Image (cartoon, rainbow, N blue to C red; front, side, top):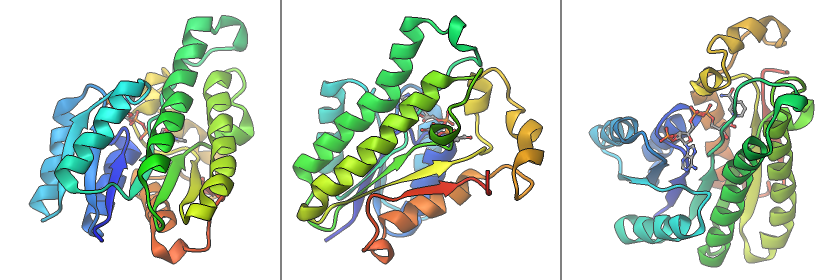
Length: 243
Ligand SMILES: NC(=O)c1ccc[n+]([C@@H]2O[C@H](COP(=O)([O-])OP(=O)(O)OC[C@H]3O[C@@H](n4cnc5c(N)ncnc54)[C@H](OP(=O)(O)O)[C@@H]3O)[C@@H](O)[C@H]2O)c1
């Protein structure tokens, strides 16, 4: 059976790198994004130019009806969806706890965790044995991100718990669930946090002495989804240069 994967938040960064890599490995790829259609179209064009099968679809994956629509559209265009990468994640401006509003906290949790819940639930309803889910968590789940974004860190801790629980719950159906926990990776997310140069500023604290590239995270995701990882489930794989 063909392998078809939905990658949430794949218009740029780690999601885009994962989309290109999985397409090169033969997956049909659904590039999900929220609003940057030009970026998504570029990822789509690159995959098609390389001979891959792909589609792009805007959908806010923190909204239940949008997730249903996403899975239905992917299945209609690619065939049965067999794999899922819950990659969507946002953060807000670096702030201490006392300056984080309730609205911000709820927005971060809804975008990062509710999306993971909704997409995983849809996958669990549809996937057959051999299917796999990979959640893109963060090293922040371990560090807690004090004085910067404890809301973001908490959302990633919740993703880790979902990974552990769903791995056990879906194992009897032959569906594996794992997570990668990237460290400091060169993407545009850091500009959203108010510091585009954050990775380079903190590079000296990373044992390997540098920030990571999105492709290095994509390699770990691809392995966890692959049959080479057939006995791996419920794992939280740090991709953080030792950080
Ligand atoms: N970069 C790092 O250093 C790092 C470290 C640890 C963990 N991570 C995690 O890795 C994942 C990817 O990070 P990144 O740095 O590659 O992010 P990024 O470059 O900021 O890209 C985020 C992607 O998510 C999409 N998105 C945001 N909200 C969405 C929603 N509600 N529905 C659908 N799509 C949505 C964006 O689409 P639009 O462009 O259309 O808005 C974009 O494609 C995130 O979960 C992040 O927390 C990143």
